[in-house]
Length: 283
Image (cartoon, rainbow, N blue to C red; front, side):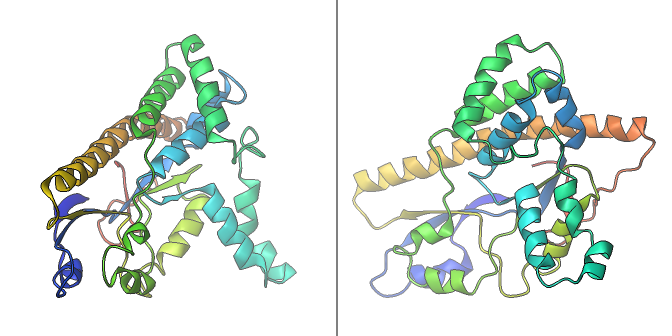
């Protein structure tokens, strides 16, 4: 959900006497895309033992430039915090230990692979990949990385010194909702942690936008033109990057659907609209 508007919640800040008049570009995610990547990873591992880790690192890193990505590291942190005060009997009944146990062998110890190293590896491997899922995925991911290279998340807190009252608004917000969930399989331990966390999202205040850029209207024309150009260049890069990501997600979903058919399983994907925790198939 991406729009340009003077939101009511920000108008009050812009209309204070002496304050600059501002127009805001806001990026919100009211639902998280479900990306069950588990069955896709073996296609990558057959091509190169480090390809799953390199793919995972670059994919998460580039998605993170536009949104909060809930993935294994978030679930591990959540599980660790939740298990601190658990007794032995409670741990045996809990799903939290499964978060760590469920990490695929070819990713264990490599979840934090350096993104620059991973990109270099992808570029080295890509020309030699056979036609198929792995070659398509790596190609789209390199396109995604190229598009988003040089950009960082335009997080709302970066505008606190420009927008009066924004700091108070963010202090009273409940963070921003995730734009996607990367799990191994639907209804796995990561998904369970995600669902648990989503029960509480938004209970302590409104959700802040994932992306916030500002255009100050009452300023010299040249400076205004430069700022407008910057905002639209950012928006264009975001949309092109997410378009490449959507192609990757489509392949991952097709691979997952094939996995379900082979194992005669049914999808656990939620499809009804609602809170930010409800999943959608597309970015």
